[in-house]
Length: 338
Image (cartoon, rainbow, N blue to C red; front, side):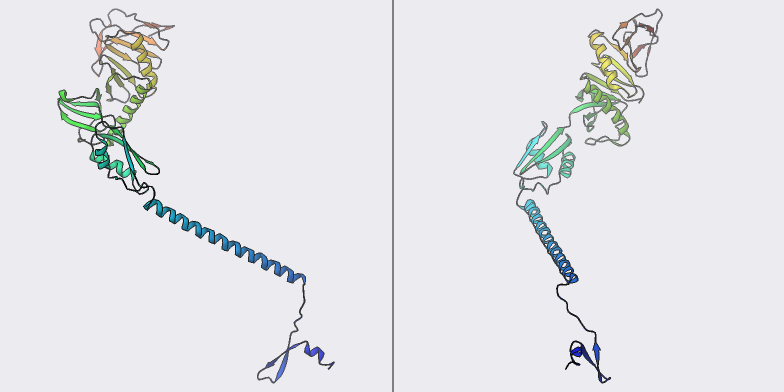
């Protein structure tokens, strides 16, 4: 028995065809060894990680379904339009604007297309310049409209074209008596446009100049402009009250030039005086009265001082825009003279 004891601790395997047992390696079992503890710890860590991943996936799926449910409810049950308000239009009724927008009560706020509705309104209603549509949660819609009001007119012989503030053609080929727009535009080509069109294309450069002049005038609260000349980019001019032409030169420092000219008109000239103010040179303004017989010139600097030392023999001529100006202007200002 003693001799068999070592054999009992080993494992045997019968090898077919060889007729004998083969001793397999002895497997020693150990308990609570350091390697076994480490393996258990590692298994525990892996188990916790798997469980954590399972929880994360579960919560992500739950969040996904909640979001899908919320979106579905928002597009079908919640945020349906109950009130539509129209602001800004005096030419069209609210009912007309709502009908032409294609938006109806009961439509969902998330499913409407504000840009498409705004374009539809401008296409269908030629007396509208611009449209801005706002969603007001949970159930309201606001349509802000800017009417296309006659603002400018362009002449072509005896034919007149009327343009809105938003550069939309309101009328073409009408007589002078039919024109209600207050400001004459010169230098803007509009012959290719039809009624209802918005001016664009090659006219954009002129429109940019017009916009700069409008902004400068608004900044200085100049509201009595009766004509704007855009023929030359370097010889822009505006006409004020139909009696004073202000030459602005190029488009730089327009606000300063207009402000300067407006101060001169308000403080240095008579209320009924006619003539030309040349504000195209920085820091200086030349005024030429419109009467050819008594042509006189004054140069006014930014200090606000003015003199009218006109030499005898000065003659009067005309500028390219047809406004009377003195061909020679002499004045002493401050410490300098011109």
